[in-house]
Length: 217
Image 1 (cartoon, helix red, strand yellow):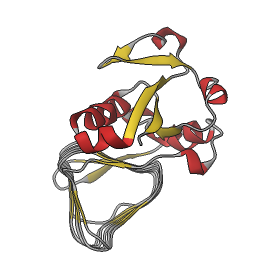
Image 2 (cartoon, rainbow, N blue to C red):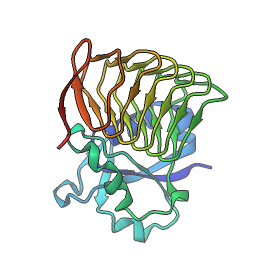
Image 3 (tube, rainbow, N blue to C red):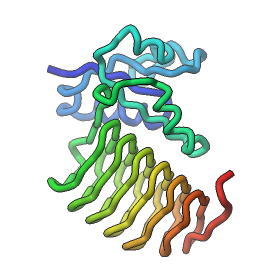
């Protein structure tokens, strides 16, 4: 029997999660997507693939048992993700984790709650992905890599072995990170960067090889 699911907010990552669910017979049997939740009143009634925005987070009070996948993920707001998700005031037992069946996940890897792993990812031996993380399509997370809570990894990212991405970081699409490198907490790595040395917390880094552009405000 499928579980009922809300997606929050009506953004790109949540819509990608819906597409992933609808594209997989296995996921469609597990999840019945009731609708999107978004506090922007102008989005109420909009839809993706026939699934509508039902309203703001007050809807959660009307449906107390349904599961939730909360995926705020815009790079401009990545440092607000923790507060946005906390603002939903949901019991952790209500958070879903969705892994597309086309992705390969090692038996000894660990993935937290409220996580979304998009199609065609590879998550290797003893990799750890924290709570509230987003891993977009075709991303490779090699052996013993660690991704802290509230992190977002774009599409086609490659993390080599023992890489560590600390909490609340955003890794843009097509980024490659050398083995053993640490990306400090609350950092952003721009699209296509090649990270060959560790980055201190709270920086924006871009380029090949990646260099610190600025500290976060």
